[in-house]
Length: 324
Image (tube, rainbow, N blue to C red; front, side):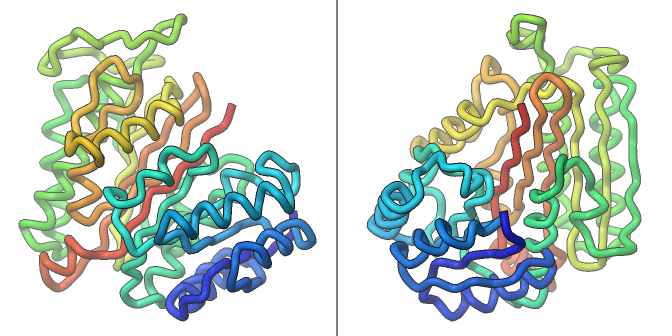
């Protein structure tokens, strides 16, 4: 793979955004205005990362068809985990993406100031190029301090959530914003504590356990929370040691919550118990990193804004990295 980011788009805003991402990620930017030319560049240049405009299903089909004909969907010339779909439509309007075997990264095209959103997403792209993407420090601007909290019992969840809310208010997040983020953290921790644990057969351990049950978080059940703020973005990561997040199930979950307007997954879907729809629509972005049977880190990002309306409508994305 070359150190290049290929953008397949005719949109000026995509070019501006991709330029900032490439600069932050240390990649050279290649441009193609149509899928056929883009597929040719994939074949000849073997870019490390591909950004493609798929606002309409026709655009997506044209890209997938060109990629299949010119390169092959499963060719060694491209890493399917390195394809990032850019869209002006919400996930409610692009179910064809989630159903695709090459889906892994979704960027909602509300970039705002690309001098802020571009470098922010550039750090996600840079992280995804590493051998393992388990590192919150590289997802925030240099110098951001990371606090790590190890929870010893499920009874500490509420205390941790309240601590996050107080931290945010001290960092000048408005109360309504702090409450939205605290609710997201509650979802992350609940998932790591109750939905992620699986037995040797891969079945969830606590599928029938009331979420009010007090459980010791020791050994394999240990849960960590990492918190960082770089002046623009707050990032909170929940870490579990089960690595039970399944990409196929997660994608089906995302499709379900956006087509049926449901956001609570059944507890039998291991590692996918997040209230993702609620968090995403309240302005949050997600970065899922999971190594099977070893570790899962789910990070949620929120940008501090001057108003709640800006907060809710901020730039956001869903990005995934799975290792087997």
